[in-house]
Image (cartoon, rainbow, N blue to C red):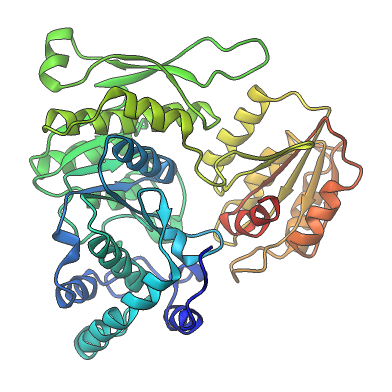
Length: 459
């Protein structure tokens, strides 16, 4: 971290004093609470930094952070100056604002915030007080403008249709995947969730997605057709062909393969690219990578200079924090931000395929609005020891006593699993380290907020 600016604490306090939906679960996802008109007015007051350079806009239930980083890094290796906006952050707010793989300095935050605060105050009487996420999104656009980026990769915060980022005219609209998450805000069916995600699709953009369930895929197709957008789809236009793994290990190699007839594929602009190597673990990451490759091939078709080597370098070197991230080798320690059934299933599948430890310990915490009972059952079907805890940096946590009662209900089904409880993540880490051997696997998972408390200890 750079030397902290003397007014940094004051600036951060100004942001966190605003309404912050990342710390609440009871705000309906509607136009009353998520006001794009206010965001639009704020950016208009700031001179429309969101319309300055091309935007690649990325939504999805899971995978959007990985795809955002893979595209941004590919473009950086191709010689572009790239802005990348993601959320939430692990430790520092500045992590959300990245230019050419470097997070914003505290000085840049302090310098830009008075301008943003003045604009927010000017529109408040008509549009109401701007929220934490609206202000940080505006901060991202202004930071990228000040840093003179050539292209901005913007990750959606929640949903898509009403998200504060959805005020740009994107060159590419990307949807990584659709599964169940944030049902209270986005709906209880895949169609409803897909409708919110597909809200980022606008006329003039090209759509690329990695959505496999047909009911969600049809929603995206219909929105693309309604907006007269071209579209490439995983499973129809391109696919992942995973290479055979070595014995006892999951392969991180795959081929990117167009599925159209050869002549049509050339017209479409998709080219077969063999033998990509991924740094990130998990078969799901090869699908994320394929979506990123398709996005880069569309940019090439549009005239951008992106060498294949830039794609290969990005995929082989990029490790997004807390995405099945190995943070220690003895004992093998992994931090992962899985927080819904789909991502937890992918995590545990990857652990089974990639590692053969003598003992498996999972430290688990969750948020109240997640399906923590189902995630806990998946974990108890995998682990030898489960340590239940709660995080301290957000009020959304499930009390550890509640998790313990859920584990007790599962005891008869998984009698061999040792279950411990810890009042906080620091003590949970001490429990995990006790009686551990070099051949043990320890995995911290269940919530991004748990991951953000644990990961700094391994830096």
